[in-house]
Every structure is written in structure tokens, then in C-alpha cells.
Length: 95
Image (cartoon, rainbow, N blue to C red; front, side, top):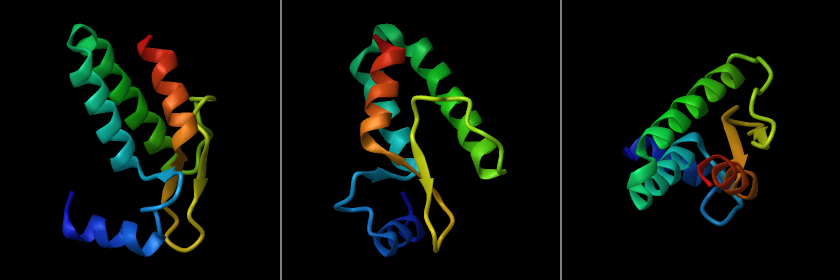
């Protein structure tokens, strides 16, 4: 993660919140893939699926992933995901 990303997260106040930026979700997905190497193909497909859904949300379309709860930061307009929904979505697709 770059300095600009870290500063942006700090300004949004994400350190102590239950919200995750897209980069954080990708990091969690990568960590889960490394923990279960036998499911690496499924994990990479899941990252691709997340990226596709995130791109659609960024362009104002509706989410295809109903388990992923999100909100848009009111100042920075970034899409933030709830940690609980990301964990639920991840366990649903990798188990």
C-alpha cells in the first residue's frame, strides 16, 4: 500500500472502524488464498469476482454480490465494505 492510500484511509478514519476499503478486502482475500493453497484457483476467481463487482459499484451500477454490504464515504466517495459482510461472503464462497 502506498503513502497516498495510507493517508486517505487515515483521513477517512478506517483504522478503528468495521469498514474496509477495497484494498483491504483484496488483502484479506489474498491472505485467505494463501491459507488454503488447495483452493487457489477458486480464490483467484473470487478476487476477480470482487474486482468486477467493485468496478460496477464505482460506476453507479447495482451490486451483484448480495452478501457484500457496502456504503459510500460521504466526503471521499470511496466504496467501503463492512468487515462482517466480507467475512460472511468469503466463508460462503471458500467453504
